Length: 292
Length: 162
Image (cartoon, rainbow over all chains, first blue to last red; front, side, top):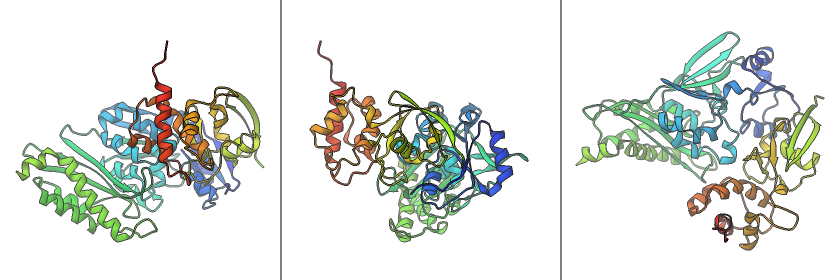
């Protein structure tokens, strides 16, 4: 099908985009990479009166590292995938990117678009949760920094107000003893995940796990941190028994739905298995020593 | 009705048109420019039949508005062959290995694979299958398309005889 009629505004600056949002509120929709919004329009599941296109806003496409890693909201997913600064400072993003749809989609798709859209099966919200990212939103009222754990509300629903624009993602530097892992299961490479996990953790001098962040996607109405698993892991010595216990615990925090691709029970099973595998990936040699 | 003036370079020719904002780039190429080699399958970004190159990178033309192509350079399947009589090595490889039956998906496969075969002299089967994953073919079972990619990579990266 074809999109319903709408008025189109190509914004050339954040200020121009904010002007449209403050005037039109919920009647306006922000067009980033368009890889979710345009299909939604083609299906006529949405009929916004006005589209604000952010693609000409060059100030929103950047990757900067100055203590904190800062990524502009309009940075293309294909750029994230290939960027050497990202690979060095936030390798969890690099590990996740090949799973984000297909190259043809990543050419257009943006990090900000994916986060603001908040699809429950999307990888990038979980990656931001695991990295303890902060999302920066701007409106004519000012700027506010929203921790990732307070940003993703539920199905296609975020902390963004109708007059706000997601402009930037800030990622704290990973301490040198940080481990990370990314795992997902999809029907076909690049399809939406049936279930997936992105996690980071640190090992202290005594070899104990510190600051674990276990983020799951595809198994709830939005990506979420598994507090139950994180409580078990925090301060514990790595062992295969701990891995299994933490993997079982994620089931307490998730509420997967059933659809034609997978039942809720299967998604729960996947969440546990993938969490165990991701923990083994991240712990690696530390797990080997602990079980000897 | 709002109409916007755009200028787009497609296969080396620059076109100027006034278009409605809701016109998809796929429909602009087919209906406004008559370049019907770009096929439309699902119109929601799943099948890959409408894949084109935008500034050299593969994109779904059904997931872009024509107005967003303003000022950009596009290659469609009509712009792939070097001249009227010869085929591009990737097209030649599809022909020789029977990598198509009905052919509806073929333009999308070719456009997705062009940057891949240019940058992969000797890809593994897994790399090829990952590169194909964004395009659907309902006839071939993909086996011959994998063969075509291997042949195309050999043809394009063969050492040149003096």
